[in-house]
Image (cartoon, rainbow over all chains, first blue to last red; front, side):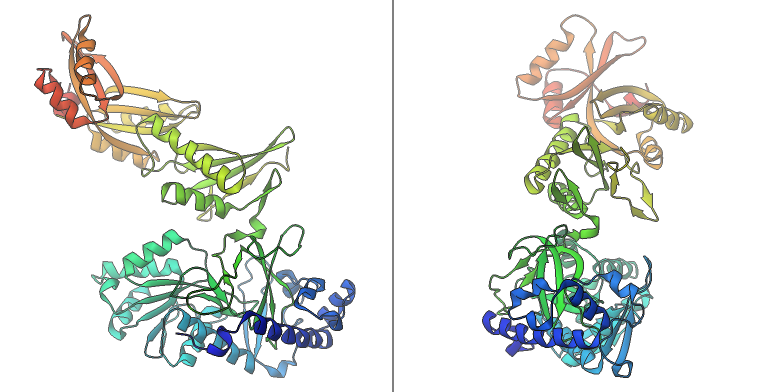
Length: 434
Length: 143
């Protein structure tokens, strides 16, 4: 099923023509209304009239999260404050909060994009949708809520927390779709089991999961345990919130980004040059329709690739590979870009579990060295030396094959890798001190 | 006929072996036999102890990765050719020894060898058929 047949299946040529029209209007608008963009355009020596094709996008300046912080709270808004009907904000744990605003039309567009997303995930208006994303300044709860209502489904605004009560509501109201983080779905499952309820026996059939990184392995785990289809949803508050992209239930192979609203680029995070289609790099998004807070070439920091091959669901929107890492975490080892999450995937593929690991980068002479330390837990431990040595060699081989980097693998005792505030510290880069 | 052995993953650095011995001593666990296999980075300590359940729990609580494996304790005549005759009947059946370690008991005419086979059940069958004495786990733990 497709919610917005006209848009979601537009042939690429027509889609690009629409994108270009919208991009031209957008550049005119931000240049006229946002001093920040006017200055950035002037500094880059580009005028809105220079944008004649989509390829001219590359002349426009980038926008970063820091720009939002520097103009806290409303400095980047492109409409008078009277026209802003909603504000959301990030928690600001790593600096000043970033504030995003929405006009009435922005909220409506967002609801439509979220409704499209729910339909792509397999939901219909006959579904009962349990929204367990947090409601509040965070965009997750309200974003999913408005979309579910726009679709016409029965919407349950549960928000986060009170897990035992959520289990009871899931059972009593018979929700068929749940929106939450993937890890929370597993927590719900375990909490339900403790109360003697197996979610598998409930009518729940679809999970729309986002707001945190997860793996294919985790998807299989959730699908088996809860007896549902687990769908990946992509979004970020600076751009809109949930619903920027969604996997279709037909393929479950990458999130279709709603390209009539968002113009996509993949860039090399170091050179900032646009990369050819299919290449892996940082996702950059330009919002084509946002009124209150338009974003020009916003650097998401998410590392991914775009797949433009036709999808069996019929949607023509490009599919974004599951986020492979964050460009802020990127390591450059002997000229090769390496993301901790790539190492994690390799460990997962090699052994089928998530061991604790740490990356140690050193410089010996003029050569960078990468040591991958893997904690030996009971699942990978063997009383035979050869089995453990084989494991190390296998990991090393896979890292070489997939990343093109030679690493040494060191097996270490459990808990020898430092944890800070419950989170493992993944990278120790000793190159700067030597 | 199988005996329980625990195995412990050790990083190759000072104090790790001592830590294992300390934990077992504090838990009042007696070590019956042991072997340490090592590489440049890590080692695997294998132990037969008086109470493997308790030993495993103690070491796990102490932060070690601990495994449990089935081994076979064989009584080998304490004379030239004693070991050879046993290995000969096993290799004849294509059974591979992953590793082994031996100890001599006080007041005994025989040595005891702990074997880790690739096919434990088949090995026990071959040894029993040939009249070799296998020491039951319970006897071994309380020697």
